[in-house]
Image 1: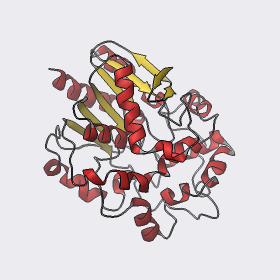
Image 2: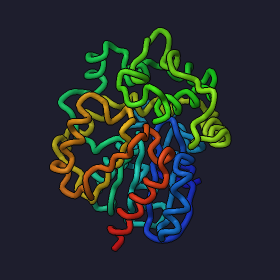
Image 3: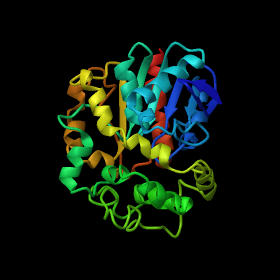
Image 4: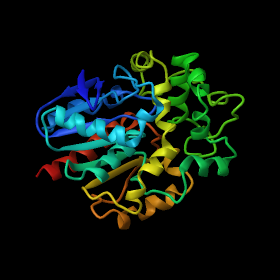
Length: 317
């Protein structure tokens, strides 16, 4: 446990050398990086993965406003400094990717290099994201469902283990409907988000019952803290107005699966195609993992580790 930015964060740590901060997404925890610790440490890096605010054993502030992108970036910068470092490499997956990208955008003096998995670099749109999705999907997009106070919180907490099992399978490359943006991302608000999701008879090979035990334990405090990240999306759009049109300047790497639902979001394929011209220090063309779903570093740990080690080692010099 470590005091950071006015809260206490739980971290997992291994290795010595230049600092690499690994940021998980939703609905995950530090444990989603379990396959990265040993290889990165063996490559000569100090690896630290926190439970981000609102998750796991870290603090869960009650105020929804305490989960803005400025708070989340502040946690990363505070963590780097609390660990006795002046700079670090930052890697994020899912929600952790926007936090990593924004940390590099807002504090390039601290970020030696940044990598994002699943979610591409942030380019602020012309409209608030929740309003845009509300209009496009008639209120059925999952971001909008998550913004109904207490609703998704109660649905997910009713049977935490089943919730997580359904979510992880449905967004994985193993699901039969993986890669289709009209599946799993929209729902009937009256029936809930999980209603039509498959509950698999067996877990995918990359997710064990022990992994699911660990994950379930991390949601003993419920899902509200994690959902509060979504409840700040329009607020984040307002707060980052000064960075409209800005680009991430530190060296960057982007990895995603071709069966991931997120890169298929409306407008995202077009953005990904333009990244090499939009990102001045993109390490190389985005890395596409064939047959991989949303849980990038868990589904394809060897390929992700190899790409990260190559990227980080080159920057370390």
